[in-house]
Length: 139
Image (cartoon, rainbow, N blue to C red; front, side, top):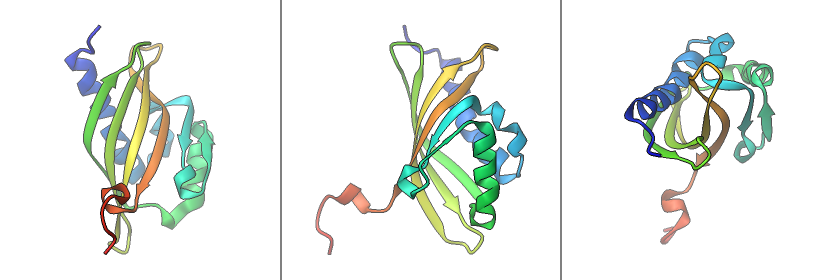
């Protein structure tokens, strides 16, 4: 079965909503983006896995001023999986208070919840640190 255009749009908007909520400090609304038992894998940043909405909010608050002031997402690619889940890849840009910027890749597993809406059940955040993923000369 092919994923309907409406579902592709809904998943893309879901991914975009994350940045709007977090940047506005509306952490009590993250249930609109993630499942209650979400696994947020920050291992690439040395922070391991954060499990659940409460832990995700606590982690953001603990990071405090170390959070980006702006999360921007782009290059969203949506792929339907055989079991009705969706795999979504996207690129994220984080702008810090001092103007510096970093890039990540989001690897999301998106599921349909009881309401019929889509939510992210697993997000892996990978820092982009090396051009071409290390291919080519370094110098």
